[in-house]
Amino acid sequence: MKSPYDVIVKPIITEKTMKMIEVEGCKYGKYTFEVAPGANKVEVKLAVEKVFNVEVKDVNIINVRKKQRRMGRYEGYCPAVRKAIVTLEEGQSIPAFEI
Image 1: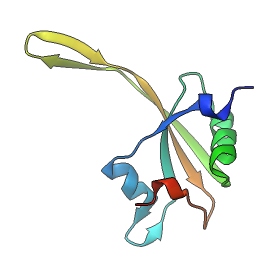
Image 2 (image 1 turned 90 degrees about the vertical axis):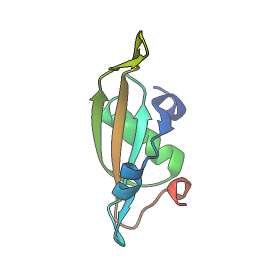
Image 3 (image 1 turned 45 degrees about the vertical axis):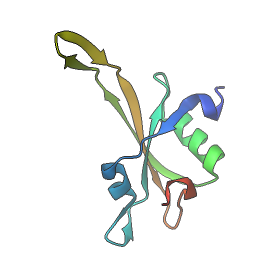
Image 4 (image 1 turned 60 degrees about the vertical axis):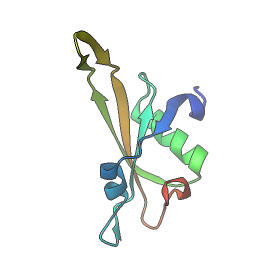
């Protein structure tokens, strides 16, 4: 079995993901992580539960395609990533995301 630190690459912290955590006082409890390309929902759930010591309710996984970017006459691609949106049980939170 994979190590939890091999499954979770990094947390994704943007304005949109911060709003998914808490909107107008009510907690949605949805946290977003970039995960390994071959990771499935079960591996992500076990990794988040082990690393952050929380109870996971649901896991949704999204494959984000690579995007073409240009700078002047040079073209390239941003890499493709696999994101996981993890919903926690009621009353659970990950303190690393709290600002």
